[in-house]
Length: 212
Image 1 (cartoon, one colour):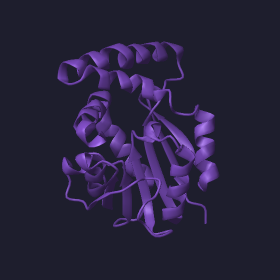
Image 2 (cartoon, helix red, strand yellow):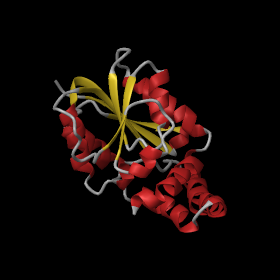
Image 3 (spheres, one colour):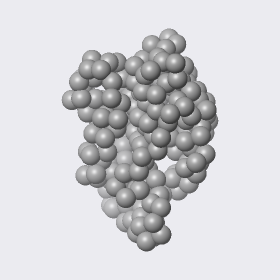
Image 4 (tube, one colour):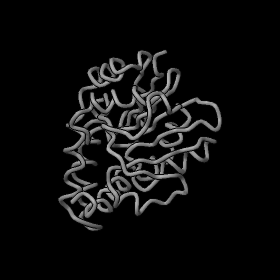
């Protein structure tokens, strides 16, 4: 079923992030701060946007996604694998870094996902997880709520299935509150994890180093 709606959700993601997404991806890759040529696993890679940015950053990306439909539509030359992010076909401590863009809110077992990252990332390796957020400013929160609750679903409805776009603002509510979220990352094995707000707080970047 997910394969059938994969292109629709990829379009949701594109409308959501629009031009700011380019800058957010660059910030995500830069936050890894790993040696050139390091192997980086991009989870929930979709059509490969972050894989292409990782290549431009001098890394060797491998994209992974649960959806074969997403992988079939990928626009990247990087190796791709169909895989469940909760059970990756990767040996322990084999990967230098992991990225993930706009997928945390879709994991029912977010703790299990983070534990799996800790398993595959070698000590000293890095993660950079990009996700939507709500601004801390009350005024910005109102504008954010209007845009994601009214404007994006309306635009999306003209382009595709309106119901798919209604899911977008609702999905943000599935994320833990910021303190609990960063606590989960640290508890998984990334003790120095920090949360960086982007574009006034409408996006967030969770960055951490695997404990030695």
